[in-house]
Length: 302
Ligand SMILES: Nc1nc2c(ncn2[C@@H]2O[C@H](COP(=O)(O)OP(=O)(O)OP(=O)(O)O)[C@@H](O)[C@H]2O)c(=O)[nH]1
Ligand SMILES: [Mg+2]
Image (cartoon, rainbow, N blue to C red; front, top):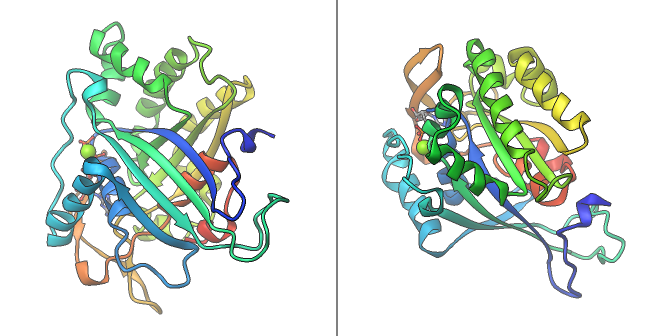
């Protein structure tokens, strides 16, 4: 089965699954915040299936520093610059270890605490890449980025859940992206696209966070149609996720852990309100799926 294609099993060690990922999406959709929050993994919930998130190498450390020096200080990240060459764009490596779980379907896995390691190398593209897709095809920088994207087995397409008025624009850019992607045979059939709705601590999204398909379809019907058509062509698979890099505050009457800076057609701009209680949700679920091809029930619970 396809989900086994990257999975290596070594006796008495953790199951290793890996993916080469590119994060795409509009300016301000929350790509850098997503990656930095994931690398930082603040206030881990003891009940979470995630044991550790370990940044590997200098680039990974840089992400953690961004989380600590910017997000955790209640500040906004800078816009990511579009490098002249896609190959110069930082490749972040993260290793995520999940606690042993009983539901793991590999028959070789012994029940006793079989750890799962998810290893990703991931490039966080500037949103400019995405807006360029909309405006100008033929551009050489764009082509260079598309070539770079072809190396990926997993694409995370991040969309601010509060920007539904841009559904048509996103669908148009996505269409160009998919057309360019399908022009080659590398990774065809194996490629996965995770559509991740970000900033889902916003109340109208949060109430439906456990129904990512429903939410995606309700907010971005045209994007979903494009993705479905692509999947039906048999070139790859699509799945839907909800996440928030900021998370909620409080248990009984949770409220978004954010101070709103602005809200518009593009979505929401905000900073973290209480960094001491900062706990993102939904960040690992798409990565698990990109690495293994399966959904993880506990991770999906957020
Ligand atoms: N409410 C809320 N705001 C968020 C979240 N993640 C990011 N933001 C805010 O959204 C804005 C953009 O976040 P970035 O992570 O810089 O967005 P980006 O996709 O990297 O943008 P570019 O680098 O310009 O392409 C900032 O105001 C962030 O603080 C989130 O989970 N919830
Ligand atoms: Mg960015």
